[in-house]
Amino acid sequence: MSAFAHVTVSRVERYAGPIFTVYSDQVTMSSGSTAGRDVVCAKGAVGVVALDDVDRVVLIRQYRHAVGERLWELPAGLRDVAGEDLVRGAARELAEETDLVAGRYDLLIDLHTSPGFTDEPIRIFLAREISAVPEHERHVRHDEEADLEIAWFDLDEAIAMIFRGEITNAAAVGGLLAAARARDEGWVTLRPA
Image (tube, rainbow, N blue to C red):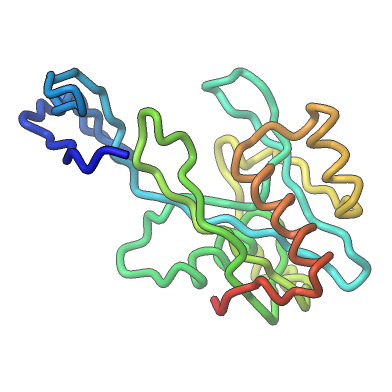
């Protein structure tokens, strides 16, 4: 295994927006040559596997323009509130997207969504001790969230949906598989939130 350091020798900003920035980099390769790589630098995200006391998980289905489809996903969102703790951000997303709160959060997994072109990380929490947000405190949803579908699935059924190709969102696939494994191991693999 080579100990060669890959060094970014130049970077050109191609686009800067509110959610991500795109750069074209020139990077040294193990062979000693230099290659071009486009990189999307993103804010990062948080997601939640919310599991009730009878082993059901809440999923949302919303329109995703990049793929032109409505996808089953975990409640999740960008880390776009300055200074917000990751658990607090996950709790906010859970409440905004599903009208639910959790009494307990554990760290489930960290993953990179598509490291071939983006640095975007997502931290996924397991939320338990689930209850409803009071009606008068619920978030008003807009844009893609305005018509999102909220549904409960048995965790094992959600896993089956992955293998049938019905759940394809990377964070949902990773989070659900990790939750099922953690459950099967008696929750001993969970990390403190």
